[in-house]
Image (cartoon, rainbow, N blue to C red; front, side, top):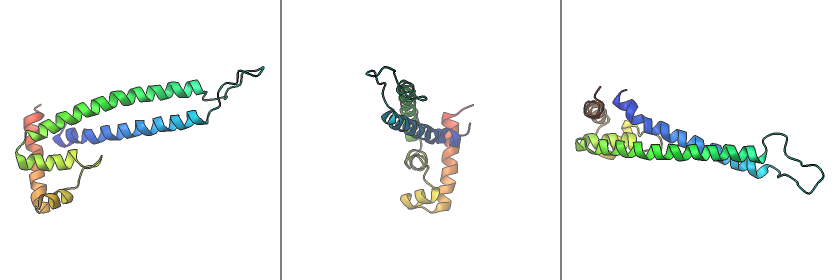
Length: 141
């Protein structure tokens, strides 16, 4: 695994969390739309498919998986933050901006160049050096 792939795993985990959040919201909406069992009639009536019980079971499973994934995400995120912070300051700044910041999407090198008041070619060069230094320090194979 390259340093870039390793650092980008955080973004993959963010997408997984987002997907689980959406699935849980869909199941909550579905549960709200289902009719409950009518016990006051001669015949007990339920929805023919996706009964309330089935939807709630699926919702609980999704929420449990979300809990496991959020714990994993925070553990892995903190590990990467600590690893990046231990790098040379200019490398750390580029890697932090590229792989930690960005709300789920890596910042482009052009954006990093603007923030650091450097040229794009310089940031591109430093980014390559930073990835190589990160690989040598943290991803020894």
